[in-house]
Image 1 (cartoon, rainbow, N blue to C red):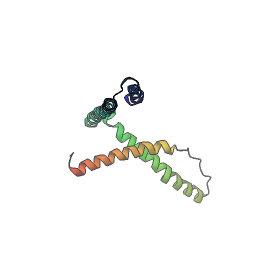
Image 2: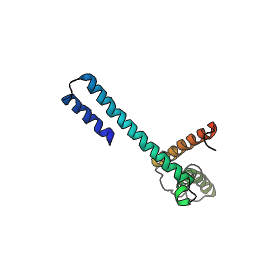
Image 3: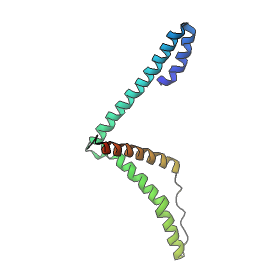
Image 4: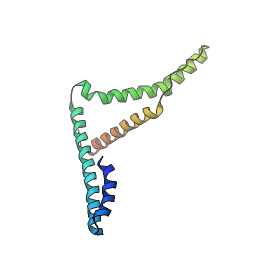
Length: 131
């Protein structure tokens, strides 16, 4: 939200402040403030993630593994199970089954996002930051 306000506020600086140096300093301060705000939001989310990961309650800490296994099973079904079943049913002389269509864009967005997070976790472990 703050990012959306920076452009119009910076435009208003042109109308009310004539000194170019002061105008540039205020524009820089506004942009810096937005960056700091975004960093504070990210830090807050990291703390929430840390608390969730440390929880022993499956409904709090278990949602990420659940989503990961769900994505993995969907990929397994789409790329291995269904094609293999098609080959086996064709070999046995049965009519092939029409399988449901996958929304691969959404599935890959979720899965690649999780794999990216998993990669960062692996990097932390490799560097000895976490146990």
